[in-house]
Length: 128
Image 1 (cartoon, one colour):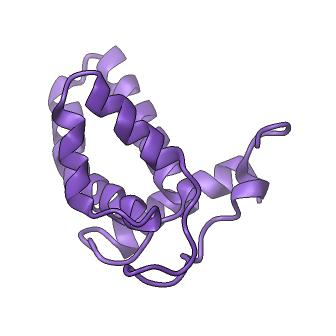
Image 2: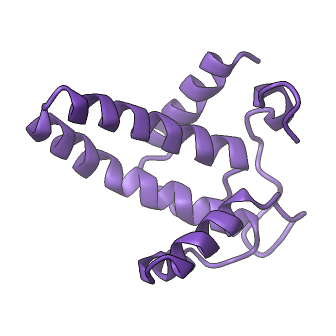
């Protein structure tokens, strides 16, 4: 799977298919590609000084972003409420990034292993 297709699939899954779905699990590729796309579009709108449009984008993606984060934490066998740790300056942010980067556990209390974008095929050459 190509990088572009992986990003499109992750964005469509988070925005169209699971907009406010806080149950289940999300793999690393789904979460990180969605966040990457959100960051890039937001940065471009900021550079172009389209602040109102940027604000509307961020408001519209807040719920799917929180839902994707919750599902990602479920994949590492943690409650979605752990996202609140990210409010702690520096340490909380680093802890959340660490958890989000961890590979998912096997079947856990939040469900079976997610059917995800192929992590290995979506990664750049040489990445683990």
